[in-house]
Amino acid sequence: MTTLATLASSDVATKLGAGDIRLIDIRDADEFAREHIEGAISLPLSTWRSETPGFKGDLPTVFMCRSGMRTESNRKQLALHAANDTHMLEGGLDAWKKQGLPTIIDAKAPIEIIRQVHITAGSLILAGAVLATLVHPGFLGLSAFVGAGLLFAGVSGFCGMAHLLRAMPWNKAEAASSV
Image (tube, rainbow, N blue to C red; front, side, top):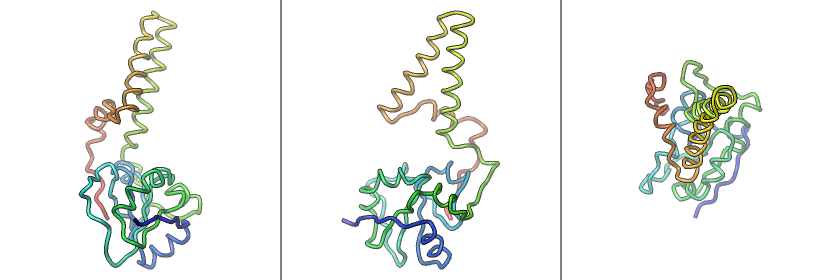
């Protein structure tokens, strides 16, 4: 099995600029649309199936995510689909930006779905607590309902709020196309 060594941002930038690597961004399409590295290919890990073809070819592959944690935690799955000369971008997009390397930002793209979930859930829980304090204790049920939904999402991997938010008009923009 292939193991994935890490590469520093500066090394990836040099190799990407020279056309010596294929950079695969495994974040979801909404994250990629908001900000990505020029030349990166969007291939969201969430869309992979066991039959996903390997990344064979003439170029070494470097996988990346936002912080490096998603890439690291999926190291075994990535290695199953990788060719021999395959790496991970150390520290992900965050480390890339800390080095002052450029990204393509689309400020008009909706914020990432997971951040929308955090904002919505947090707002509903806070509203339930405030209303329970100021109006009627029964509003604690709102906070409990949202908390239970978050617990279910964490345990099952299914987040109904994320699905609902994806259907909202501001998230209907065309998904980011792969480069």
